[in-house]
Image (spheres, rainbow, N blue to C red):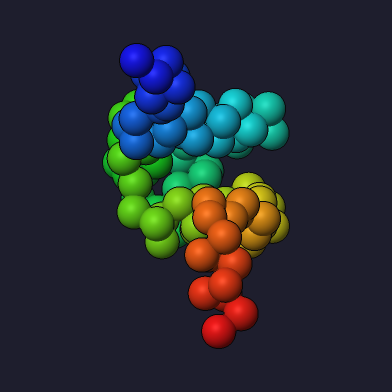
Length: 94
């Protein structure tokens, strides 16, 4: 059996990892959840829910990233996505 499949993270685990990273950055910069809410325009409830559950809309995540001056990180997301097959390379050039 392929062990690689069992090492993949679930979408929930990935969301929680992102939320933990954002929380660490927020705390490192000494910004309260309330202040982040005010700076980003994302409701305090949504900020709290995101940090606790990883659940957030893409637009709210973007607003939080901008407020924390992390928008460049989002802009680079998927920038260097690897090709999964030769067919993908061919399709890109057509």
